[in-house]
Length: 512
Image (cartoon, rainbow, N blue to C red; front, side):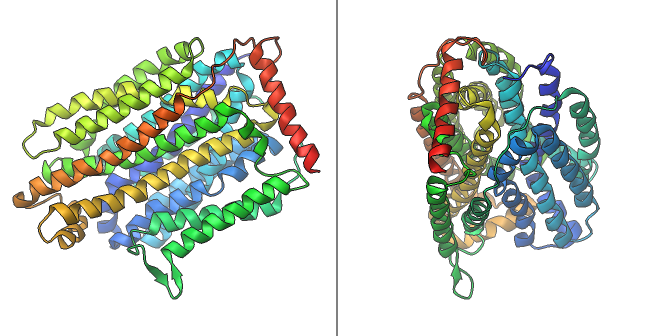
């Protein structure tokens, strides 16, 4: 741990920008119909407004995490914040969909530069015995952004216009820059040799895999152009990532991804858990919002307001969980939160019928609030507890990459399942499913289709419920953390952190 007199102002300063970039991951969805109308774009082009951001965000995370170790997390964070804020202005000023897509790519790149630095700074300025409280704020920010995004997006689009979902980032970005400049310390850097082959292999592999998964539904999982197919891209992405893994194993220099990090059991398991969370949080909202708007006739703002109990309870419990997570085994909090999330989704599924009183959905929303409070901080604390400071950026990059990759998988998988269940439950199945996109834009659905559509959405939401249960099972295998007194003390966690650092360095030395 590095000696920082006031770590909490530094944390709150970083949280502002982190909240902003996560907000933009899902705020655009409620604005898509207005963007289509204003820019005279088709549905495929508007899908790319989100896909381009997701791709540009996910692909560079491993690289930007390591850059933070090399050049300093504060410098990287401020650079990313400037890129993100200027790109937000460009998004709002876009006069056609092609320009908007290009601006979203730049925005995603800025987000990728910023995100790993937040966890890296927390890992380095808070001792392990106080890191749980700090990570609870970080985790609550991630959870709140996911919940607030649709609500804020609906209010801005209905009140000021779609451009304001981007313009709102300008004052936030300026305030965040000033606060980080004043409150976040310039942490020591660590000399790293830059793994050029690793950068190329990881970027190409992630791009092929993410692009194939994200765009599979657009091309009906078939041919994209000529001999290039969706499955060909996915297989090629897996092959290139396998080559990346082999290169990291046998690289005689310093690898981009220190495989020694995965010798820590909790780091490996926490990455699996956050992948399941990323999958579930992304996937469950789509069938739920479709049901609210297309069967119950709610506006985007009204449907988003049904998530208010989730946001209020999650945010209110975050400080409480932060105090508890440093004193108890975090596996019980994480596993309990993940089981609660699965239970809430199953409850939503059972309620998704045309005649269910709409206020009933506030109850599972409240359960999701308790679930979110118990998930983010325990997982992130478990992942980073034993990270040596020298590898904080690399570990943060891995953790955020797996979370984002889970989100991509969730987005693609739920789209496929929704189409399949509509085909099974609606008259003239696939034709009705294909018409679903058009009906979503107008908010209308013939009453004769309400029952079948509700059933299809209720069945679809069971997939993320099953995936998050896998995450709960994984959390039960977390090793119990030892009592700590900081990196510089004589506690077991300090020694285990130093031991892990020695293992990582030994692995690098043996490779060279």
